[in-house]
Length: 99
Image 1 (tube, rainbow, N blue to C red):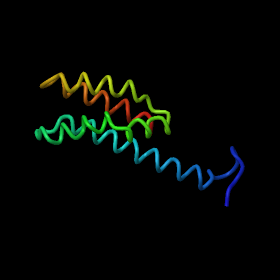
Image 2: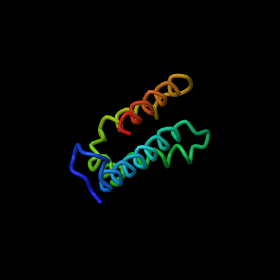
Image 3: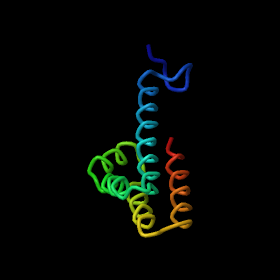
């Protein structure tokens, strides 16, 4: 059951894509927040995710600025304390805008 664009309810296909984008954004936000973890292992796993082909593929598929996020993650990884927390909050907010 699909309707024409701009008429009635969104199509099932559109709704499915929205759910996928929401999941991708949630994964990226979770990885950004993991950069703040007390566990160095969790931080390292998050950093590895941002360098993975999966991350790049998901970004390309959903028109998310992969390079911009990677640049900010690199900056976050080098910071500490309050500055790091501020950069993480800013990036989480920015990634949320894709949702």
